[in-house]
Length: 307
Image (cartoon, rainbow, N blue to C red):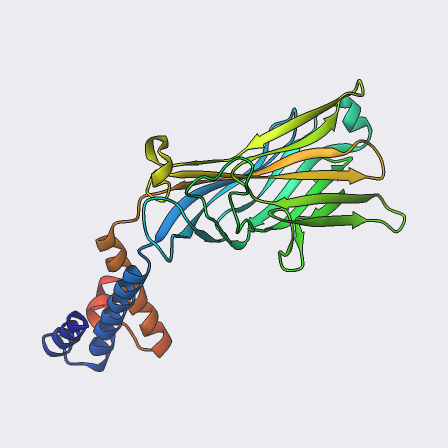
C-alpha cells in the first residue's frame, strides 16, 4: 500500500493538478493494488489448454479445444497435484460426418457435439492409490450442452435428435454420473448412463456383429514435466481424465463411447506485463465509469484533439 500511496502522491503533485489527472492516476494506482492483491492470492492459479473429446469405437474423435484458468492446490501449494478447481475454459461445437453407407441409409448422417466445460473440483491426484481403490474422491466436473444425431442432412440444421449432456444444474450427466434420457411420447427414446471422471482405466462391453462380447477400455493419466508424477501441478504438467457413456435406444444396438478431458498446464504470464496491462485497463475503465474525459495529452495522442 505504500507504493500505491506514493504513486497517488506523484500523480497529484508532480503532474497537472487537474481533477481528471488525479482521477486517472488514482485509477492506475488502484489497478496496480488490485493486481498485486490478486497475484498474492492467486499463486496457485495455473493457465491451461484443454481438449474435450468424445471417443467412439472405430471412428475419429468428436473434439473441441479451448483455454482456461485452474486453481491448483488451493490449500497446500506444491508441485504434486492434490486438488484442481476448474471454471469452464473449453467450449465449442464439432461435427463428425458418418461415411458408413449402412448407417447413412438409416438416416444418420453425422454426429454433432455442442459442449462447454462446467465448474467443479477434482482430487486428490497424488499420491497414487492401489488399482482396486478409487483415486478421485471428488470426481465431479459436469459438461453442459448437447450431443446430436444429424438425420438426413450432415449439417444438423433440419432434422436432428438431441441428448442433453447434463441436467439439474450439472448434478446428473457426463462427468457427474446418473441417467440421461431424451425423446419418448411416440418419438425415438434414448437413455444414456453416465459416470464421474477418473484417471484410472474404465471399460464398457460391446457386442460384435458375430454375437461375441468384448470389452473396450479407456485410461486416464497424470504426468508432470518429463513424465514425473510428483510435479503435475507445475508448468508442463498434463492431466487426462476419462468417463464412460453407454447409450441405449429403442432401436438398434447400444452405443458405447468415452469422454476424455485433457489439460496441459502452461507457464504463468510475465508478472510485469500483466501488471502494466491490467493497471492501464482498469484506469481507463475507471474513467469511463465516472464519465470523465481523458487527459489532454492522451486525447491529443489518440487524435481526438485537433490543433
